[in-house]
Length: 138
Image (tube, rainbow, N blue to C red; front, side, top):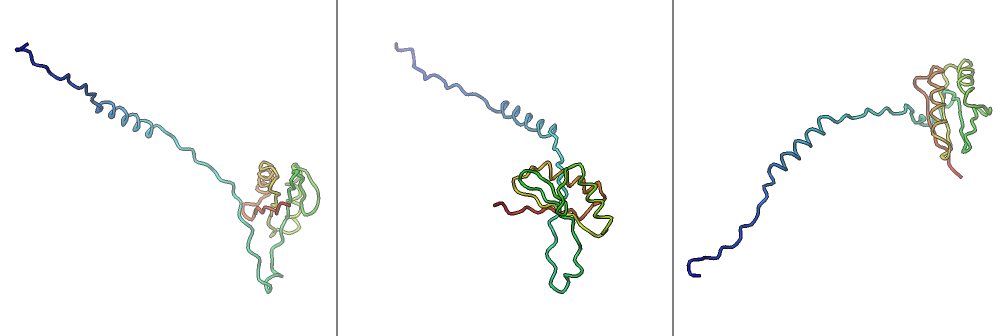
């Protein structure tokens, strides 16, 4: 046993450089090939602030459209369905062309109904002046 020397076994090393290269190449590939969707927002403005007391006479009249929690729609106090909202808006706008639309919605009302009312106001000729107000829930 004199001629034999005992060697410790060599540690097995794994070279991680090729794996890191592959990960970076995949990362670059997914970044370059990804597409980003351009979301379109709903165009609603908050109602204008109340005018001071001396300017109350010049205040612009509004078409008040109320949607309650059971999605019942009233236009200036008149109960209507979603199909005749546009006709009601056009009728009131013909009487007073400077009027704005205020959609007052209950927090439990359906979003789709509010969007349909907004679309009806846009198709009635309003490009601005369509306001959304959430009513207080009880």
